[in-house]
Image (cartoon, rainbow, N blue to C red; front, side):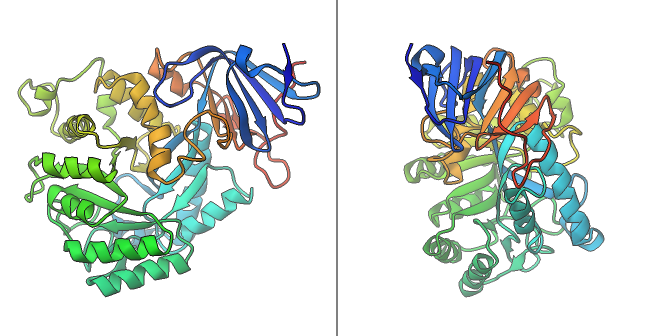
Length: 440
């Protein structure tokens, strides 16, 4: 067999390779990496043997797959605190330390990219830069900084309050000046902000469109928090790139109001539905699938705390059937799990309780969110030309989704950053040890 990859840094051979595009894994997989990018990937017989001098790492019982992408997190917040408490009681220095801890934990869990959808001041930009420069371990971070919201609107305590189109445009420009990677706007109220209304829109569509247009003019994507269908529909019409949560609530904030016409418009526009919500622990620990009728209370199997999650999953299924691009994320305000595996537990619940096809779930936490955040040309699949962000797990997650919890290794741009669920040691300005362990 011909040798390949002269001058390459790393050759990974694994029992299976899962590309991340929805296809089943192939056995006997291999990935060739050079300068942080994937040069070739597929069956080892197709990739070829590594050239002399190339470092080789083997995971005979492992599956190599794309690094996970959590497209909606809050690294500095904690479950159980309101947004007002977060600002009033938690100093920025403590918020930053929270983010440092969360970043290390989720990187070790196989999450190599996150999009933080709301924090105070420049805390997340500073954390992003510290990770990038190798001072602390963590995933690649895209930070929105403070969200844009109305006076007394959702996340007002940490956001930029803007009540007109002009004020909104000014907030966009301020965020760009502060080096935000994307813009977050609150199109409806939210549960973490007392006094806001989750079922009602916070902006007219004309204001949302003006704000979205200015974000796009300045090269930034824009994401809209939207629980209520009223605000969701306006955000879609305004040209927002991703709709977050997508709860389809009626104007009371208590009932369901799925709108097929709005979903069809999302599909036509290519607007991403980012179903950002961690399931209750009780659902993850459920032994088997829960039927849709149980979510409505007919079967008595689902508690009131679990019902919104099941309803959101059913709406996602309906939207997908209409052609809406859907991904799942955790909305993680960390504290629901103590090991950083929030996204893996979400995937487990989607498969085991929600009965989503496992390969589709794996695609919706890798390839689809990569496209949603505008990085589809660089991340999300194990394919030629992509950045070498890789997760290696023991076993086959396409057969047993819980394999996602058994992390053997995490690579970020070709550098080993975690082994067996723990950190690799730091070397120079890159968090991770020299790539791989030679086996021949």
